[in-house]
Amino acid sequence: MARFLFTTWEGGGHVQPLLLVAQELRARGHAVLILSDACNEADAAPLDLPFRAWTTAPSQTGKSREDDRLKDHEADNPLEVIHRLLDRVMAGPALAYARDTLAAIDAFRPDAVVSQELLLGVMMAAEARALPLALFAANIWSLPTLAGVPPFGAGMPAATSDEERGMHAMVTQMSRGFFQAGLPTLNAARAELALEPLEDLFGQLDTARKILLGTSKAFDFAPATLAPPFVYVGPYLADPAWAEPTPAPAGDSPLVLVSFSSLYQAQETVLRDVIAALGRLPVRALVTTGPTLDPAEFPAPDNVSVVRSAAHDALLPQTALFITHAGHGSTLRPLMAGAPLLCLPMGRDQNDNAARVLARGAGLRLAPDAGADKIAAAISELVATSDYRNAAAILGQKVLQDARARSAAREIEAIV
Image (cartoon, rainbow, N blue to C red; front, side):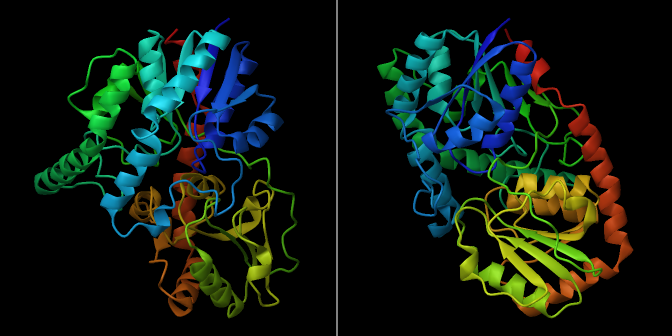
């Protein structure tokens, strides 16, 4: 059987899906090794996955708000977010990532490398060793390299006219240009590995034989034909290892679950507004703060329980409404249980996930600073109106079918 080196970094919700793919390959008889930030060893251990931490590349040891590498909640505009990605993940530490990956390749002797899509340094190392490479994106595609979908970040709906398609293409091309600021640094790293310089930063992705989109085609605004090397492989989602079994609050009123990012996005204010809104309504609610926030910071009315974590698998079938920042996993898992969503996106892929929910009538979207009054009104509408639940159930069944037919392991096997 084959040997696969998996690489990722502590960026929140994309870590566990990659680990689930590695676990699936191991169950199929292959040898795997995870190379990631030291704090992700606690995620790999429950899945019985061999683990190695970055040594010269950045390696977070914790998951607190102080540990977060990007701190993109501090960025003033999308361009600054791109520069943080370039400087702290994609280009700035590329040579360090490459050197750590080369050391792991020499020790583990993999037949192929599977990497999260932002680690350009890992891709360089696979190229330098002439190893087959697959990229795995645990979300909708975030980089400006895929035609036929709206540009990432702004939460635009799918184009319905030539004019809108032209506008999408223009914005995508502009975004692609912004990323070229990292090209000199990337080429300097490539020179250290005796690799030819690139004319476009995204030329580094061309070394991948396959780019696997770990989302549901039914959820995404999928183009009519998805050009190689892109392929949808279905969502890989489950409760994280740190989520504790937690019963739903007692009572017969509708159950509302609230879950925001496991990373810090300065979500304290919106969480307090959500809690205040829930306190005015005839519902029972369970709010999870995640590992970066202390539940004690959030006093709550009697009908609202605030905890650090809760395993959602047991709670979602009972849920009348799910309130979320609209991260990928926090969007798809409620849909698969037929729960409508109130989306309060705060950046990253969240506006785009929310746009896909809205397009199917499966929920509502508000700005995170909408305030308690508007949040309460949206909760009341979503709980009282069956159309949202029906639409969520229809979309969720399609997503569930894609999840049951997920194919990342088979696609990865095929590159060896």
